[in-house]
Image 1 (spheres, helix red, strand yellow):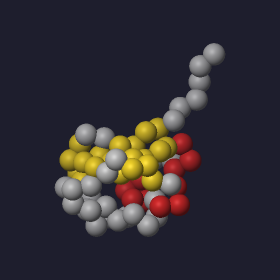
Image 2: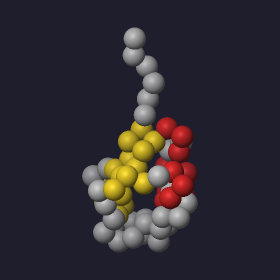
Image 3: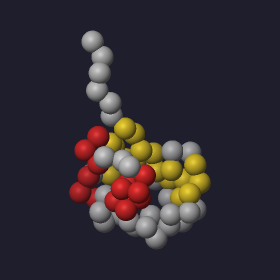
Image 4: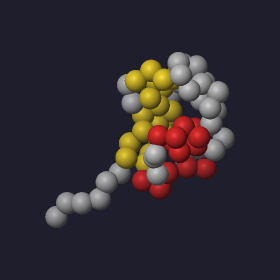
Length: 65
């Protein structure tokens, strides 16, 4: 199982970019921490999700005053 934003998911073996596309994330507007390390966007396509991985995906939104 892979823990993503606090939820256990059965996505091990999947490329991170495949997961992001399937979930509708736009890579231009997110940052990802994997196992307490920030991933650079160039690593997204190389990262294969492994059993025990812990990811936090943060979506940036515009706005304000």
